[in-house]
Image (tube, rainbow, N blue to C red; front, side, top):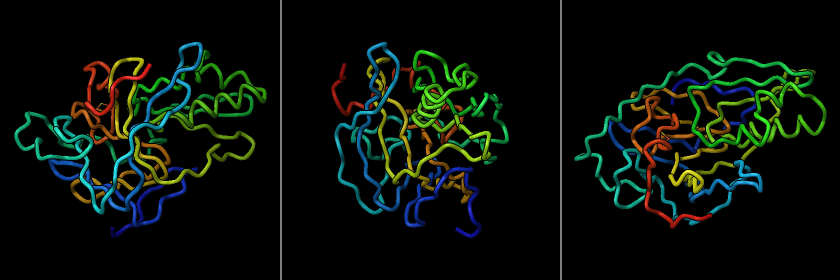
Length: 245
Ligand code: FES
């Protein structure tokens, strides 16, 4: 790494030993041995995405290669299936900071920014009231819910700023890799990368370092290497764990 990578406001970057390299037409090469396991999206009593429940964990190695074509027979690891698979893995995402292409909605005490291109269809943005409406409510309880929704979005498309300070409402998160399972829609989802792990493109450029990122592992996103929610419509199955709930 030559230049310092761009860092999203509110993000505490992981130590340099952690990184994810997108290999050309191949897997993600993960360095730093972050914990790796399945993460189930759990709904609340009203049926809205509310929290994550950990599932199966995997032994990690240095480095390790995670599948991004969706065809491996050894999930979540690469088994070389991409070489024969008819899947286009070229990166298409912008290197611009997410805020550059975000819309902002200002409420009485908080401001929400949203970059829709990074939607991973986790649906934490709708906990009964949708976050775009909730931010306009104001009040302690409402603001807490607004921040909670943004901080649970697996892809980090949503950021919430405190109007008084101009600082994002964020907490530091330890480096971690979660393989999203979404029983409500009967689909497996992206690789949720938490804790400011730097993601580097095949040509050596760093994407913006963010607290939450969702990397495509179904191979079908139009915003590679990031998830764009396509796994939901194709009902991607990683074959890792039987469905829960
Ligand atoms: S995992 Fe979400 S689009 Fe591929």
